[in-house]
Amino acid sequence: MDELPETLAARGFLVGEGIEAGLSAHRLRAGALAKPFRGIRAVEGPETLVERAAAYAPLIRPWQCVAGVSALAVLGLPVPWRLAREEVVELVSLKGRGKPEREGVRVRRLTADGLEPWWVDGLPVAPAPLAWALMGGRCTVHELVVLGDAIVTAADNYPGRRIPGPLASIDELREQVERWVGRSGAAALRAALPRIREGVESPRESDMRLLIVDAGMPEPEVQVEVFDPQTGLLLGRADLAHREHRVVEEYEGDGHRAKGQWDRDIQKYRDFERIGLLVVRATNRDFVPSPDRWLGDLAATLERRSP
Image (cartoon, rainbow, N blue to C red; front, side, top):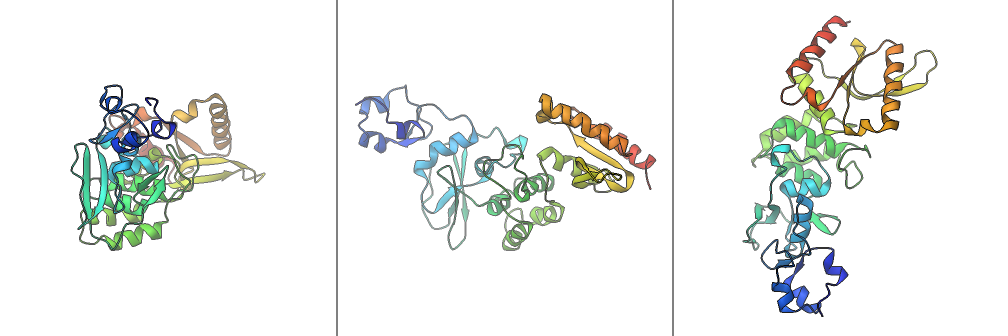
């Protein structure tokens, strides 16, 4: 038998599984099959973080689960851009149990009574609060806030979402921080926790809010519903809003390019301006390589419209 069974074609599989399925030793050694890890074969070599984790899945033991950047990708949380090109599978494993020694795998030991992983598309992955805490030693406070926003939001349109949110509450993140005392990243997690907000709909919205505050401006509200003061009708939601200044900030991501969304956005901005709101728009170009000019313009706008 030389045909690859459908059950094996969809994922990485152990060499032993291939033999049990009837594959010849020649087929398993042949170059047609990818060899992402020692002892693993796959139809194609994995390219994304999620694909690499899925390819390694047959080797994950009951006391281990996907963690680190790999867990963020599997959960659909925003991976910091400087870490997105990593090509290793990250795991967390209980201390005192076997540790895999394979190229392309990074393991962190964890002292705990036991791991209770979430299962996402057949992969055991660290629960969102633990996945967040495990990044404490690798991420900046800003990045941890962005991750926290993504975890606690219920927005079903959050980019990259793979399972419905919220993935945890702010109280659950607080409990995780309390359990993390003395571990790597504990101070950064404590600093990030009070800055996490519910209702955010994209990583860039979090970035905007944090940049605004860090530049010395008042913190804007998140996802503010705007009503017509005369009719009471809902005109739309603002990404961010300085209500007292009657200024709203809107981030124009790629999703806004679709014609239907573009038309709705234009009408929403007209309605906002009709009732006296000033709309300050931004694109990725306003933040890369530096947000200083956009922040300076916004600061001047808020100063002019200060109550």
